[in-house]
Each structure stands twice: as structure tokens, then as C-alpha cells.
Length: 151
Image (tube, rainbow, N blue to C red; front, side):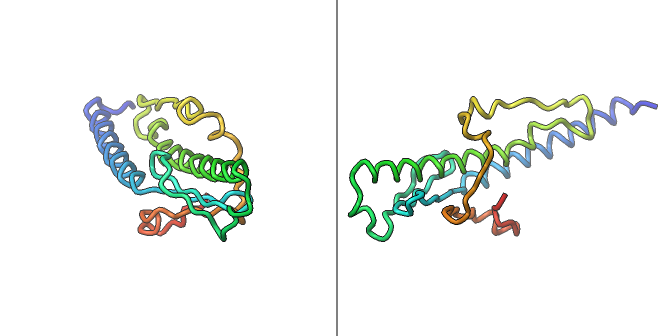
């Protein structure tokens, strides 16, 4: 027996409202997110904000004094790009549930997002995090909900 149209519309509206609230909450949380990553030579720590913008550069242990300008530039770029990639993956994981099909309303099929086109091909590559050199700043909202921000 099929469900009456009114009941299906009621379910769809409830799911839409829940999705809107979830998206608003996720957007607020993402506005507070930041990630910091160390370069592989441990000379530079770069921090990025929620839109991947560079928010900080730290030169660690005066290692930059013994580096050529090209080496220092490479360390800055490596750390910055790695931090941006972490932020992109974080955004992708946070927003992905909103694109999935509805389990309660079969008519809501979800939609496909081309993350590669949005963030570039690196975001879809295997995430081979090296926790020894990774220095992720855990977003405050993760602490508030009891998650550690780890994958």
C-alpha cells in the first residue's frame, strides 16, 4: 500500500527543514575551521582559514637561516598547499551528506558534486596522512561536539 501524498509531502518538508538546519550549522562550523601543516623539512608551518586563505606562516627553529631562498619558498609552498588540501577535504566531507539521496523520501535522489572540478584533482587522491609531520589545528567546534577531527 502506498503512502498518501500528504504524508509523503510532510516527510519531504521535514527532511528539507532538517537539511536546511544542517547546512546552516555546517556553514557556521566551517567558518571557524582552520588547519596548520608542517613542511616535510619541519622548517615552516602554514595555517589556512575556511576558504583556504593563508592565515599564518611560522618559520621554526631558525631553520630558514640555513636555507636558500628557493628552499624556503619550496617549504612555504609545500606547507601551504598541504594545509589547503586538508581544508578542501574537510569541506568535502562536511558537505557530502547533503548531496546524498534521501532514505525517507525516495523521490529525493540526491545530486552529484564534482569535487575535482571544485577543488582540483588532489582532493580525491588517497589521503596518506603522515601524522608525524602533520600539525592539524583542531577546529573548536569539533571539541565542542566531542570529536577529535581525525579521519
